[in-house]
Image 1 (cartoon, chains in turn orange, blue):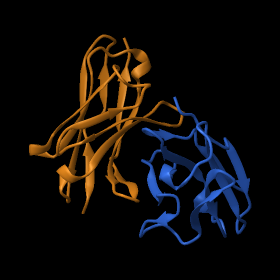
Image 2 (cartoon, one colour):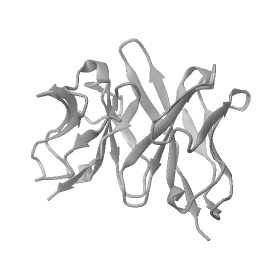
Image 3 (tube, one colour):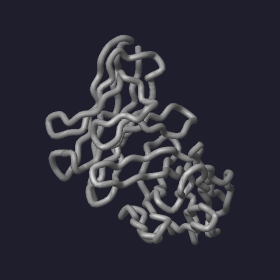
Length: 121
Length: 108
């Protein structure tokens, strides 16, 4: 079974750093993109960025460029989303998703279960 | 930055048909935008329904279909069921992926 399993919920204080993870299994991890999306409480999905594990090609949405870092360790089939200095406004649910990009076909599935990040003093 | 616009909310009766649309601030949406559609129910992760404009996944109920309509990507639900009540998001690729704001579909 193809699945993405994300790390557990986090509670942090403003100014702290954080890295959350997304582990893929049941498929060739290096050959599919991993995307990240944010969902703030009661709001819609926002695309953050995407990484290709085989060569670490990373593309950020302009809104998140410089705010987060997306990385991957293909040796353990795991992608990461990292903050160096958290703000209260970073509190949200974060999802990872597997992506495929072909000549005339692009799709995303499955999604991880989500990681809830709460930043509060 | 590209802005993708969806209807904030729609209401449909059980057994009815409804079309959700997805417009881009860059202009008419075409097949090169590779529109994807997702369904999200409260407390759950999103679930993929449609990819690359009009392709369904193996698990997508036959009553869901994707198309291009009037310069927008469209998701049509036919014979709507109560369990179709959910939020629906489109995702377009135009020099980078962008989500629409989502449509809250009420089945009433």
